[in-house]
Amino acid sequence: MAAQHSFQIIESHKGSVTGEPLHALYQLLEPEALFLELEKILFQMLPVCHMTFQSSRPPFHYEHGKNGKEEKAFILMHQGKSLGVLKLQTMNPLCNEDTMLLHEIMTQLIYPLKNALKYKQALLESRKDPLTDIGNRYAWQESYPREFFSAKRYHHPLSLILMDLDRFKVLNDTKGHLAGDKVIQAVGLSLSKLCRGSDSVYRIGGEEFMILCPYANQEGAYTLAERMRSHIQALEVPYHQDRLRVTISCGIATLCNKDTPESLFEKADGALYQAKRQGKNKIILDEDY
Image: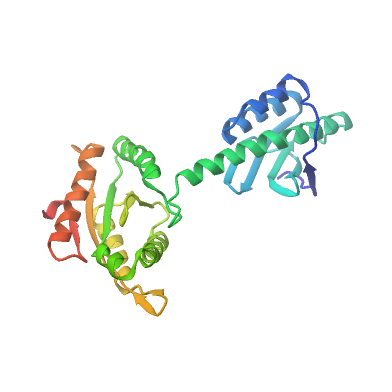
């Protein structure tokens, strides 16, 4: 394990970009690309063998290289706010000249890092539903094909749980749209908490939610859907003097060999339609209709 040292705080300052290698950092907006380029610069210019970076907003982690014996840790700051922590490892202590060069590189990193993290945060927010803070339809359309073809390639289960709030239009018409928003928020929060670590929840329409369940067979998806259905049935949402209640109907589809992304979604949609027809507050499997 590398010997740990105290953190050095690196604050942004106005200055010129030093040299062509560092200038390349200013051309990159994605954090992953930025740290790949930084890694190339550091490993060429200094005896650095391992690098890690961690930020909390947006959540981002980068790590690469072989462990060394010495470690330097930097808190990278811009206008008094931390951008994240960068740790570098070397096999031997740096000489004074290398230490000064490293400090200059860290200083020059601040502005491109700030821009890259801001860009990543904007991308994350564009994929979130502003009302519930869960994934939106755009995020679903991005994630679903990736999970579908991964399941096909590696032959692992994949299930979809498509759900819709029952009689939501009546609630909106009688209690108002603000009351409806409160219910949507409470349902979104509940679904997020009930999901397994590998699952993802999305709001893909007004009162329609999708749970993407990699590694879940039909039985596992049904167990999760039933847990969600019973939880939402018991949920009470405070609103002024009222306690708002709602139920959900669910349609479940599980991947089989002949499925395409479109056919799997259509099976979930068809199962949901049957759950609505059969009295609502129900779960229907794609094989049951």
